[in-house]
Image (cartoon, rainbow, N blue to C red; front, side):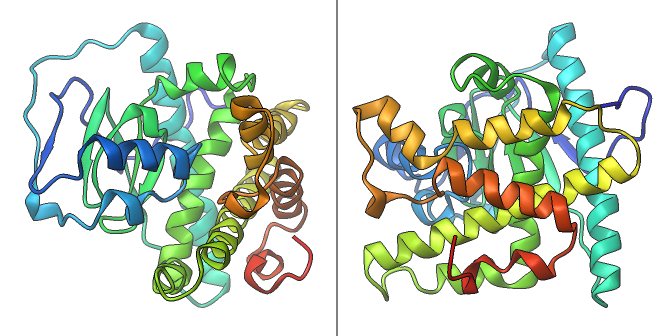
Length: 283
């Protein structure tokens, strides 16, 4: 993806180098472990991490933090990606007669406090609807390349765009509708809603890819990097790697095939209309 020298978003909160934050009434280690299992690559862990309000969160700064040259380049890259998401969604929302509200990207190291609770970098990138912020430890870029075998800058762009997709869902009210069903329906049925929400976020990541391609910023192999990343983080693929078999009823993000399908669908259409996963008969 061509990005150097291009506009960067100003909606970034840099907390790198801060000490482990403390959330009053925090959830503890067990909740974080469950959140890791649930979020896998960084969905919406708010239901697991709790509903801590921003006023209840305190962060102690550890002092000056000096990132490596490579890390700072990744930071610059995700700021450009965030700026692109702001442009595409402002345009899409305007066509729908709506106004897009930019989210904030929080860069952190090791652990972070959010309106959804305290999380470690092991949770992966996540979006918190409580404060409408995206949280990313940039070390995840290395995890994509090594642990998930999904190298390339556009693989990371896909991750950012996916989390922004959750923000879009919050602005449109879909997140609230899904969360309102938690505890009211069976675990299996709620998992199905979660899968549909995650696949829609993948679709929205495809909408972003469609936009940057239209702007002439994508190289030939860029989108393939995103598709490869979507395959690498499918529930079935991750479960088979971890335990040797998959349990479909426990899926919360969708299979590799489903994640690739909806990402590619968003890339094809580039609009909101074709991304209604909640009413889709065939995921």
